[in-house]
Length: 283
Image (cartoon, rainbow, N blue to C red; front, top):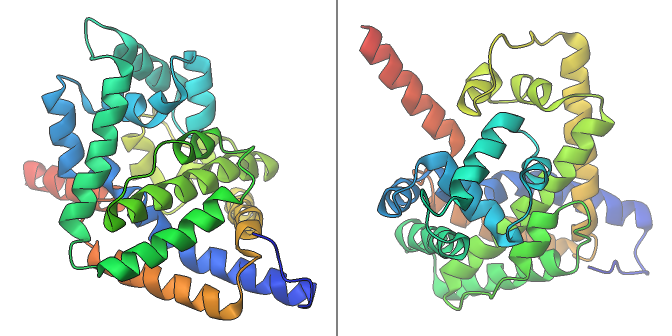
């Protein structure tokens, strides 16, 4: 979005940065919780696939039959072996359906999730939010986020709640691509970024990184903080065309939608449920 040239550039930057920071949690939930939802598990089972091949095939399959190295590069925070093995399975006609069918089913999961968890979100507000997200997403530079570019080029669904999830996911992918670059700029490798982040070692285990894991020290924690700040700064460019009233309205609508979607999955919830099951099994 183009910033208003009559407004002080410092004020534009400050507003855009604060908006990006406040929006990221809701966008992560609305654009990503479906990935770990029951609907996703059911879809994978219906296709005769395991979870990771369905995830990689559905999320990255939008790029087409690219090489495993490309898949690993665009997802960023997964071990090379997991990315390559999952992609090989997703591409194997003896083990998985055609890739376009996997992508279509992955899109269905987004819509099923929206129908279940955003049903109470008023349709007019959903369209308003989706319009704002689409404007930001389609006028932002996606050179560092090939998945965002590919998903943004997919046909837009018509129902309002489906549109919210679609454009939230595109913006989540935009931030994800920027975060990969920011982590590298801050001097961290992917595993260090995970264990120093909010998911910690539980996240590393979930992403199938082999132990032992690096112990966060003051330096890596500082680098992780810097990576988040760089990501926020890069992501904020997309919000520079918003007036203060528009930014406040965007954040209000995002907060309402995210509140309705609580319980819709999410990686933190998945990890907590897994920890509870493991504790019960050991009792």
